[in-house]
Image (cartoon, rainbow over all chains, first blue to last red; front, top):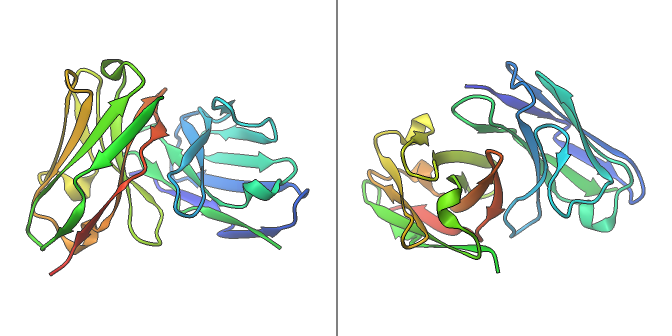
Length: 107
Length: 117
């Protein structure tokens, strides 16, 4: 099973700041990595798939990068609605797995 | 409107069974693979199972193999998860989701399964 380790666990930032979230895989997932945003009481929302492709309707301030085992989600300038929990997810091999999440909170 | 609506959750005793349903609308159901993802209270996301669009292939996480069965009825635009021999650690919100490029894209609102005596 591929383990996805997200860091940091919590990121405390102010609106307008840049957020950099990391996801490291225990073995290569090629480019088969996605990022999700989840707000309290809501289902997750797909932001990025296949490392760097934005899903429909996702603002350009969300950017994904990386390959193999190291991946990054960057939010260029945090908007108030971006404060949430973010999960990475790999479909490179079965069983599929999710990372433990990074909470982006208001500083 | 494109949407997924789960049902069938509830309180069940350890060792019991439940069948979850996920009704799809607004898209051509039989064109898409579907998946179940769960989230224990206050915890992260866990992939549970995936079924291909034709139901020819299914996949499960190890902890539910032999206990859970995913299926679909493309004539009814409905996805199912039959859960047997339920354990306390199966307590979670269960989400169904439509796959896009192999990733859960469209999600339902979730249904809560509580396994407790």
